[in-house]
Structures are given as structure tokens and as C-alpha cells.
Image (cartoon, rainbow over all chains, first blue to last red; front, side, top):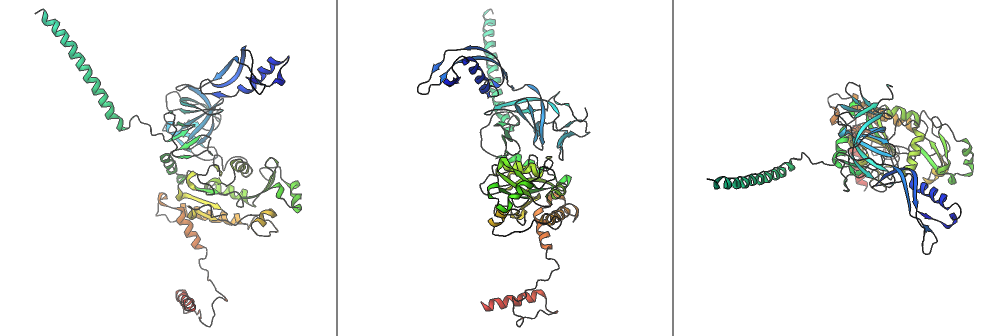
Length: 166
Length: 343
């Protein structure tokens, strides 16, 4: 963690911790996933003054809650967009796309004001804002977000809760 | 005799080993034979965030077309695009309508280009997004006036067409205008194409539209940008509201268009006619083989149907007399021979 000399003084540690929280929370890396919240500071090492600039670099060891989807994991997600290619859902900061190749064949796309996927008897409907249980089949990390590919073609996957019939 | 079993055991082992080797080799061979059958190979039809949407593998090929306007990170392969296009909307009797923004559905101007006489408009802007027509967008330093009749036009057209916005502005501008035209997101959600999504600079093309070319009608005020799709295009009269926009094109406008007789009202009649012919006329053709371009051509030909064209003061009447007896073809021939003789 790099700190400008203006922050030195009595509140050095607080400044360091707040800067850490501001910079790290909400970012994601491929290895650890999405940092949701920092839970504790384990250790702050000795600061090293950088040549020429006066900034000081502190090695900080901290604990945090991370969120990382894994391949094969079953997640619940809320549907955000439905179109003829499939639907997009999000589970927290993770964006998941389920292609219509991986939606059961008995569900057909219906276009209109509220595009949705419905079974032939109309009993199950996937539309915006409904909850879906899906399985992750691939994950990828972008600069600030995690993108996943999911499927609902297996057993016990699909709509959990339909807001319209609730 | 005692030696025999020992020898046999050894040989059993070697036989077993041989059998195992043979099986393994066979197994490898059969695997190799099965692969070309394509049972386990994924064709990677499309990618999301650089992962195949079917098998999840990470891909870094650059084939296909990016469809960032639908969702960030989405890219479709050419086969998938063809497959999606053939999943047509013709079964629910809808065609596709691609609409331009500037000078077609609205007129935008930067605040600094407002003339002194137009300054009063700043105070007249509407706050109600669903009903207003003049909007002041401070964060974009712009004012926008929606073309008269546009809301009715969109509502009526949405019953017959799945609509897209395709503009040469950037995507922030395009999305903001879409919000003004369609506050509830019924007409254009996920279908706002801007210049950031086009595949070629300064050119618009239907390659980013997920509909067959034989079912797309385009409405634009410029035809130069649609180099490859002029047959699908209906060129509409440019809409000017702000004075400097008018002057940019060399006109001097005084008043706004009227609602009832305005350009959008007549365009609505034309597209309604096209839709009617595509789906309700000429019952022999099945929907699959109908082409909106041919229908457009037919409708264009109807425009001057039954009219007589009079070339007054163009050709001297001493040379020809268009009498009741002569046919238009003969008159045409006579005119042509006159013209060529003069040259």
C-alpha cells in the first residue's frame, strides 16, 4: 500500500487502513476473486521510502471476505435480461450468461414487452427479476468484474421463485 | 512337470501383458477414430467474456462479430448469427425496423450552438419524460427536440416491428436518447446500436442486427451511410428544429412540422402498408420466401400509379401533340427521337 507523506503523523495507521479499504474492496483478481469486505488487518510491515518521490510503501497483511465462483458450482442468481440468445443473470458482483443452448429444449423464447422463456404448458417462466438456480461451467475475470457461463440444463436447476405467481 | 507350471506362469504374465498392451493400443486407436465424429468437440458458437458459452473453455480467437450493445463482453460466431437470424419473428407477424436518431426521430444541438433568439427554449424544456418533446440535458450540454408524432409512431410501429436504434453518435448519447423516446424500455431495450458497435467507420450495416436482411426496413435521413443496404432503406425528410441545425444543411426554417400531416405520419402509413402486404396480401407465397425489399419496391412503384406526368414547357408542343390516340409509349419514343436529333 503506497501512502503520500501528507498522511503521516498520528493517524498514519488509520489512513493506511482506510486507503486500503477504498482501493481494495470492490476489486477482483483471477486468483482470489472479488473482494467483498476487509475483515481485519493482520500485520503492517515497515514502510519503505521510494527513491525520488517520497511516497512510502507498506506491506499490509489483511484478511477479507472474497467471492469467487468455481466451475461446477451451483449458484442462485437473479435474471437481469432475457433475449433470444439466452438470459443474463447476476449473483452479487458476478455476471452470468446462460445461452439458450443450455436451456432445456422444452422452453421456448417468447418476445414481447417482457421477453421470457416458457415451457409449452406455461407452467415455468424465466423472465426478468426471477430467481434461477444455475450451474457454472466457466469463469473469466475482466478488469473489475467476473463473468461466468452457466447452464440450467441439468436436474434440479431452473426457476426457484417466480415474482409474478408469488 | 514342476518346471512347466513355472514356465506357464511366466508366459501367462507375458500373455496378460501382451493382451493389456493390445487393449490399450486399441483403446487409443478407437479414441482417435471417434474424435472426428465430433461427439465431444465444442464448436464454440459464441463467447462471453472470452469464454465459450457452451463449454466454458476460454477462447482468444477473433472471429465473429462483437455484440457489445446487447451486453458487454458478448461476441457471436458467424454460424450462431445465422442460426439466430433464422429464428425469425415472422411467426408472430413482426418485421424489423432500424431507426436513425438525428434528423429522423429527433434533432439535437449543443447548448453553445443555440442562437440568441433560441435562448428562451432553455426555460421551456419539459421535465416529464413520458410526454414532453423538448429536453435539456445539462450533463451532455445538449438540447433535444423530438419530432412531432414520434411517440404515436413508435407505439404503432412496435405492434408491427421489432425496433432497433442505429445512430452514428456514441453509445452514451444513444442510450440517453433511447431513454427519452422509450422511458419504459418497451421498444428498444437491448437494441440500441451506436457507432461504437458498428464494424466499419462512417458506415452502417445490418451485420450487427439479429434479423434476416429480407425482413429489415431501415428509416434514415441519409442514404450514403447505408452503402450495402440501400434496398432496405426508406429515406426520410430531414427534421430540423434548431436554427443552426437547419443552416448546417443550407435551409431556413420557420416553423415546426405538424403532427397530423407530418413526415412521420406518412412514413407510418407506408410501413403499415409494407407490413400489410408482407403478411396479409398475396396468399400464395409462404412467409419464408417473402422479401421486404421486393415489397418496398412494389410500394414505391405504386406511388405514381394512375398519375399522368406532364412535361409542361419542357418540350415544344409544335413538335409533338399528345393526342388521345397516341399512347404514352409512342409519345415517349417521339420525345426520345427528338432529344437525340437535337444532340
